[in-house]
Image 1 (cartoon, rainbow, N blue to C red):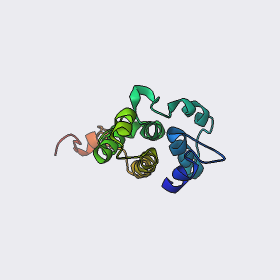
Image 2: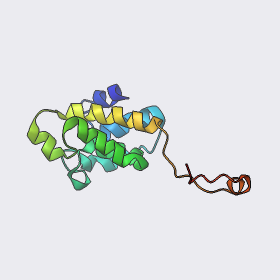
Image 3: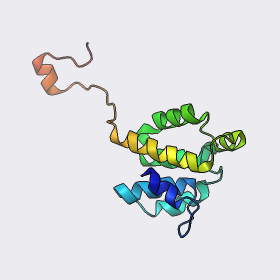
Image 4: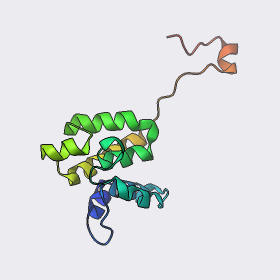
Amino acid sequence: MKDTAISVFRRPPERLNCAQSVYYAWIKSNGGDAAKLGELKSCGGGRAPGGLCGAIYAACLVVPEKEQPLQADFESRLGSKYCAELRADKKHPCEACVALAAELLLAQARSPVATPAFRTAQNETSGVNPNEP
């Protein structure tokens, strides 16, 4: 998926921005709403909501329940999750951000979502309390 994202980032014929590249790579390998690519056109070049890097913003759109770990991992590896800070630092070109966001998206999408333990009728009749160690 990372290779697909990099292959379309700012390159013909697609010439996709960072957000579009990550989302395109996802839908190419997993399916999804292709119409969203057009919406993400306005999220490149530091224009993603909250000033986020567009690449990580797109990854978070795919798996919103993993937004916090995605952003935390991205920031811990690159030093920021904000486009302006990443660009000012000049250590990580946009292509590296696209590659990392695609890589993290794939890893997070494959990991299970932690769900709280709920009491069920079976637990109540068996005497098991999922809230106790």
